[in-house]
Image 1 (cartoon, rainbow, N blue to C red):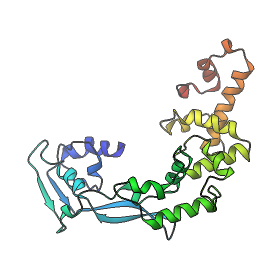
Image 2 (spheres, rainbow, N blue to C red):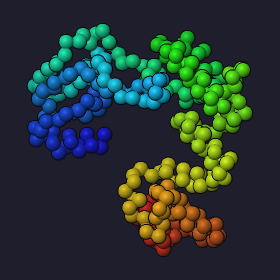
Image 3 (cartoon, rainbow, N blue to C red):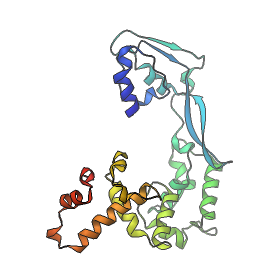
Image 4 (spheres, one colour):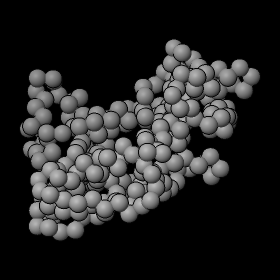
Length: 260
């Protein structure tokens, strides 16, 4: 979105040509739009069960998407729309639901650990459009392979129950990594330290401003951890009233990132 805003401010008012396949997903008004040449195609990520990964495919855009594209016209000046296709958009009024083309493993696990304790095989009856049977079958067996579900009863295993106690980390693989860090590698404290700084870190620019002595050859995460460890060490070694973060940052050369 930052790139699109830059283009709209610098190039579009000057009458430059703007190529995009995601115009429908923006809420910007382009002051110099004169023409839209719409191919009616769009790229979407779809989970392929056979190769077990997300792939990018080209499909016909839905009628709702076409209306959004068309809606960019006429906001600031008379403009023209050129449809470079003979496909009837009304045959596809809306996009395919995300649940019908995504990796369902994390969704299935979220349902299994919820008070409902049932997965998509049960929930599909309440969905306007259901995921394919093959997708649900694959998802269930993947959870069994990962030792999250019991093969005999489809209930959570002891390992699955441990995962269910953790907060939602957006994906099951990430939750597994956190559990391994806590249980197998004894680095739970490091995770908490990193989470506390990453939760307020809205740009990576400050990484270049960190003094060299904090930089780690193991990557940016370890660099941030070095910074947190330095500050926490000082905080734990002085009385609470004597700890002044601004002063510590000034001494350690971190004054430019103390807002984090």
